[in-house]
Structures are given as C-alpha cells and as structure tokens.
Length: 503
Image 1: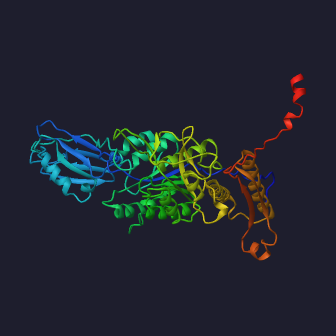
Image 2: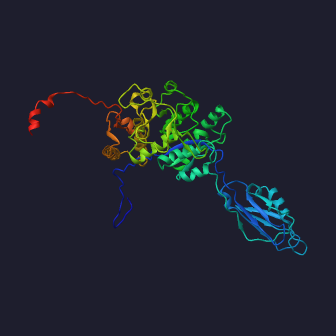
C-alpha cells in the first residue's frame, strides 16, 4: 500500500459471520465378520502367438483393480544372438525376446515364464504361467502393449474401514456367513444410510473373537478391529456417529465400544450379552456407566432367507438403522423409542407390557436403563435411556445433542483460527453461533441456546496469549417419557339436565 499508484486500488475485507452447517449424524460404524465376503479378482492378460503351446498368461501378484494398470509387451530386439531379458519401467513390463544367429526369435513361452517369475521386480507385479492345457514349449512372437484387466478390489479387506453407500450391493458382496450380511440387511430394512464397515476375522472361540473384534495397533501403525473406526474419517471422509458390533458385542467388546464412541463423540448400541432373563439384563447393565451407550434386551426375530428359518434378527443392526432413519427423517432430538421397526416378526423373550401399568417387564427393564422391545401396533424399541452415571445425560437424545452441538460449533470455526484477534472477529463468531442456535430452535432440535462472551474470563493476559473463550448453553428437547392424565368424576354436568333435555 505504500507503493506510489495513480489510480484505484481494491482491497478485499472478508469479515462477517459464516454460515454453520450441522455435521452429518446418520453415519453408521459397523464392525462385523464375513468369512465368505467377495475376495476380489486379480487382473489378467494373455499374450498369444501363432505356434501351439506358446501362450503366456500374466496374473497380477495382488488382488484388486490396481493390477489393471500393469502392461506387458513382448518385443523383437531386431538383432542377432540376443538373450532373453526383462525390463520394468513403472507399471510397464517389457520382455525382449531371445534371437538366434539369423535374428529369428527362439524364446519359448516356458522361457518367458521362468524369467518373469525369477525377476526381482517383475515377479512382485505379476505371476506368469502357461495357458490351461498348454505345456509352454511353443516359440513366442512379438506383441503389442497388452494391459492386464478385469481386476476388482476385495469388498471388505480385513480391519479396513470401507464406506458403503449402496447397502443392497454390499449385501451381495458380504456372503451368507458371519454377522455382516444380517447387520446390513437389518440396517437396509430401516434406512439408506452411509455405513462404514470394518470386517474382522472370525475367532476360534469367544476369547479369540473378542480379541479380533476389539483389535489393536500393528507395528506398522494400522488400527484393527473396533479401533479401525478411529481411522474411518481419514480413509472415507465421514466420521461414524452410530456404532455397533451386532452379534459380536460381548461385555469385553462393549466396554471397548464405549471407549471408541467417546473418542469419536458417537453413540453405541449393544445387546445385554448372554442374558437369559430380565434380571440378568438389569444386572448386566450395572457393568456400564457411560452416556454414550444404550443397552437393549431381548432380541427381535425374523425370517432368514439363507437358513430359511426364523432366527434372531440382528436387533442391534436394526437399532443402528432406526437411529439413522430418525436422524434423516425427524432429527437427532427424537429418541429411538416407540417407532415401528421394519423386517421383524417377533421377540425371542416374553416381555409383559402394559401402557398404563409401571409394574411390567418392560417397566422393570426401563427403570434399570435397559431399552426393551414391545409389540404394539408393530414391533418397537421401548426406552430412551442411556447407561450414564450422570443424570444430565440420562436420555439418548441428550447425549447426542451434546455431541452434535459440540462438533457442529467447533468444526465450523476452522476459518477463524489464526485470524487477527480483533473485537470484530469475536463478534462475528458469536453472531454466527447464535444464528445457528436460532435455526436449531426454530426447527425443534433444541429448546433454546445462547452464546456470549464473558469479559472476566477473557482477560488482557489471555487475549494477549491468543486465547478467546466463548461460552454457550443449551437446553435439549426432553422426551415425553411419563404422561399422567388426571381423571375426575363429577356430577356438575347433571345440574342443568332438564334444560339440556328441553333444548
């Protein structure tokens, strides 16, 4: 600006509030087994020659579509007495064929196969072999550049977060064995929700399965099992907010699931593992004190097309799908409870329920913070409570409101970090947050909320250190859990009986 200029300058001043977008909430994080899942296809190419038994088949060394990038060419060196040689440039393999004293090609298919499979680099890219029914003794010819093709990736690599946006297609790739197919089917019955799948290996017994499901971190830094969900956002661009491991959620697994949910600011659903009675379920609930967990007892049943019988119908998968459906259609302020569930035909335990009587099986379970299942105008989850030790987060939607507000407000202010800390910046931040609160209030997601700047907290010292502290409070929307209707009998409506008759 100090430079001399005879004319007009334009300086952009980009101040003012920024719109705040609510984070994606209907994102499912699913951990499951699927030993028969689609294993992928290796890319292949065949280079044929005129002579019999001269075809060389090239198969990518690894499964997946990366093999489709590999090319192979057989070339005539156009010289006499040349030895067979292999060269690799990037993903291109070139085979320079051997010639005799007359300059004729003398390399047989078997010579090329041996050379390729012994080459330090080429052998890591492809495996060479003779065509089926051929012995490789035919003399080969020069060829055009040939690409390997038809390679397809494994659908669900072990311990790798995979984003599923078409659940029906994913079901076809899951295979009938393990827990993945049933969980995807349960989710699909409720909603079309983005689902991040982590496939874990089946264990020989419960302890081995728990270890595989809980996971660890390898020496190379790869997270496995449930811990792989922590890497989901970096790999897929979405953070899972609705977590579960249907069919695998033992007490050990659920304990780890809670920890993962807390790290991701997500909510987890789990069964009351290995509980036969409502008393077992309420005792099991005492093992947990986290606001991020809802326990469910007993299980839905439904018809399974693979076994052609009625079996447990992935209740936790249906809870996850229902949670995503409600997020998409109503909002995260509505609890899971009292919404018809699709795709189920029964409940595997007798649960006594009466809408007006608190002394029922359903009432007993709900009083102990266990969500149960009922059949009233369709099968439904019944109960809205978490395992929280803090009454402030007793309800599922209270926890999710806290999580979603925290991430929505925080993630929306990346733009403000490292901006010059003028009073106008603080004002813009406050106005943006309060505008978002008004939007959420008007939409019914919260009762109300307000952000403000506390002058006593923002001292000269803290401001000089580049620190700005903004407070906000909010009131989540309580679910109507206990409705009391006060009924009175009166004779007052008989006082004017005669006049009513005359009229």
